[in-house]
Image 1 (cartoon, rainbow, N blue to C red):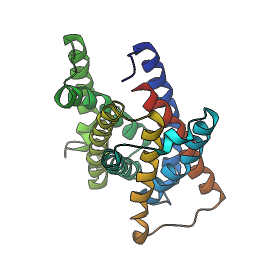
Image 2 (image 1 turned 90 degrees about the vertical axis):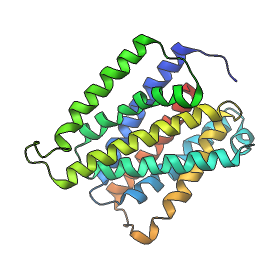
Image 3 (image 1 turned 120 degrees about the horizontal axis):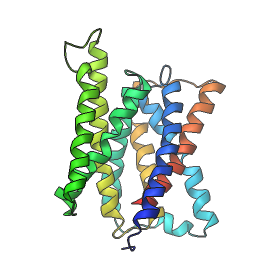
Image 4 (image 1 turned 30 degrees about the vertical axis):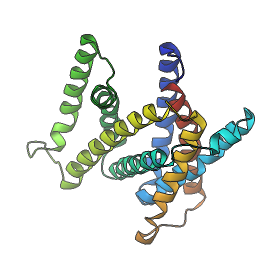
Length: 238
């Protein structure tokens, strides 16, 4: 297991957030036309390009492909594909700022799961920050989940619940990544994540995909490239 380097981990995490913000903006712009499953496929499949280029540049292509934990990668792929599908579906029901804000509950949920599933230690001041964070999320989604919210439609309420489900699944996927880093190479974790998500997303093909025009191609490819780079940086951070 690699030695801890909190400062570098935080910096890489912040960079991944910026890359994922661009990715989400691309998906949001395409979601009026492109189904969620198709968006997940392009996000995962196109992302293989930066992943494989990175592996070639550092001379570790074999490390990206070889794995000793196929089952672990399959489970991580299923969880992550479900998280992405829920997140992309929510983008079609809610404004981008709300989906993004609800998504920020994922690190809070990760903290709780890290204690429960990994046995990691969290001090009192961090628990205080988590509690404040959950309060903020509750304030954001409350109007979407109650009849007291003016002009709230059933689709918006459902979108808030789906976004929250996506955040939980994302947190679970992060815990799974943390577990995989104990035995698996970073490149293998990233590579097999995108393979598993691509295969899972193909299962939505019978439910209807659309032929992208040049503008949609640019959005989907942009989402895949920034998502791939973001995934590499995120995995390195953990």
